[in-house]
Image 1 (tube, protein in one colour):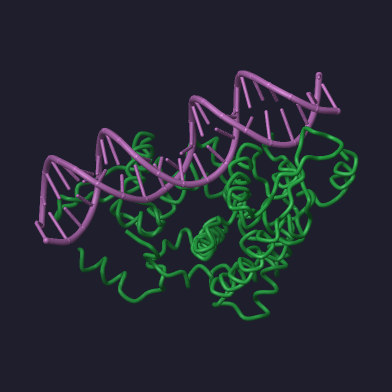
Image 2: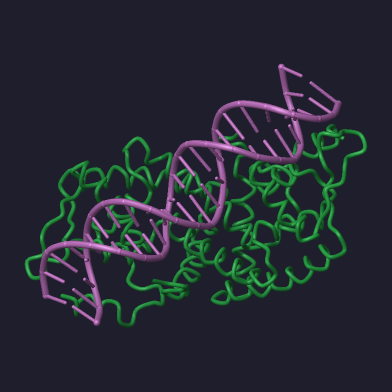
Length: 164
Length: 164
DNA sequence: TATTGTTATACTCTATAACTATA
DNA sequence: TATAGTTATAGAGTATAACAATA
């Protein structure tokens, strides 16, 4: 009996034996690659001591900053209370500063420090390598088509679904 | 200032303003749709009082059963200890039974009860509707291409990455 | 009264360690 | 010594509620 199972395991796909009843399910097909790229991204960024979410904050400030914590949270779909810890970490590493807003003292204007911009650039290069590793099974054409389909799915997700 | 932000929010995509620095990142593009289909699937199955993971167990047993808890866990990448609670729930709803294995008393052979098969069929229909809702932005061709690309990514994920 | 940021707390999900019974 | 299942526990991640300062 053990032998039977080992035979089934022996030389199938790298992911091991898969239930045929699940192979057609999009939720199944999309979630494991999603988990996989989260893993790869997390490991890739680990040497820089930032998390994938923190990379997202840096990238957002680099392209859109300065922004308030709320603004970033809305863009990246990260809760206000989660943002606090995230920004605390980045501020502690001197990658960004919390500037007072001149007109409305309720919120900050976050912007990257020179060190923050520098680290973001390094992180960006690592992220591209992580993507390359993730996408390795796909041709250039397949990658482009995948990106377009994911973008369509992404942009049709309603905001505030069960929201705050 | 608030006005500026509200303008930026006013009539963009349903997902709201997005950071241009993140729009090209596959991790970003894949994870939100992945989270979205988890949400849809969870809500869709809620009336049947089963979770998406439990649906996975039912589907796996329907197509591959009988199996041990370990077998199912390996196929669906669910930890042994998580399996216990999952199976407890399904057994409590009389959707499956834990039969003793005739040769090796260390493990069970799980198989669906008639009620389990019936509920699985109902759940399957709901799942197809959930997928339809999720995939609505894509044409038939795009859906097929997406499935193929995700399948390739899926099947190239190495087993036991940081594993047990 | 509403909003930004903060803190404390709770909850969900999952994994780790230790145990049992079997092999 | 190894494996299937179980239990208790701990951890990561995130959300909820209440609060302070400000508008």
